[in-house]
Length: 306
Image 1 (cartoon, rainbow, N blue to C red):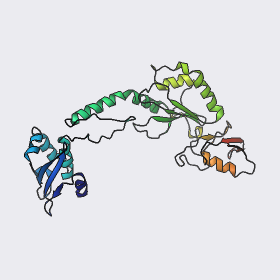
Image 2: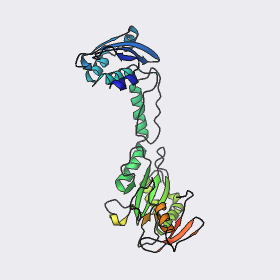
Image 3: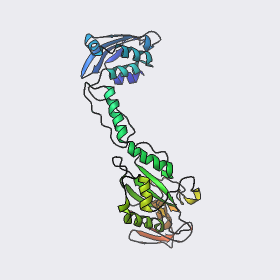
Image 4: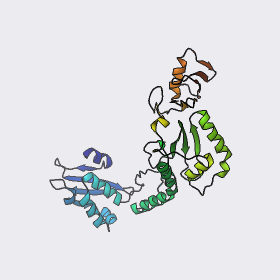
């Protein structure tokens, strides 16, 4: 506590070895105010005496009950000093940490209060209700592959479609019922028809309906729930390194054989095909055989080299 207290209040220092007397200055509203706190031998803040300058007393006028309450409930001197600083209405907005998908900007003046911040927080919560309703429905009614435990700030979901295929959507929190960014992952024979349906049926998108219902209508599918799909129906791990995440990437290359459909990381499949005597490369495309079913497999390398 001592080190933290010194960092937060460098002008407020202990006056004796027992550290029962602290004296110095606390900054608020762009000014420094003299303050002296005398603690009992057991260092319990609830039994401390608070002595301050007349200027500080004037600012705290009308807050005596709140100050006493903070003293009664503060676990230590550091906690009380932080509470006292908040009561003094700092010239800068207090740090606010929220789990929002959009920035939370606080409107603040030196005469502001925590009640004002709380009101702004509640207004921001209300504005994001539609977004969270959309994401909650997706989490409840589909098999979300990632993130496994989405935070309230997460705007993306990768949803299982079955047959080793999935769709990654990025939802705009400001317009949650509008068409999200969509990226299909899986074998061409599975995902290409879905891409065609998306382009063909885009005019059916109705912002009055839920995002999930719109996806069902436009893609002409029903999303399988996690309880319906078996693990064998959707292999998520790479068939070469047997891991899901590899340096932040997921297995996004899939064998096109409908009876196989094994996914691979691009780098893993690249290394595998490069080691085969029968594989060949033309520009950025490598032709070879699937490590699982030995059927022809093609790897188109992205712009970055593995």
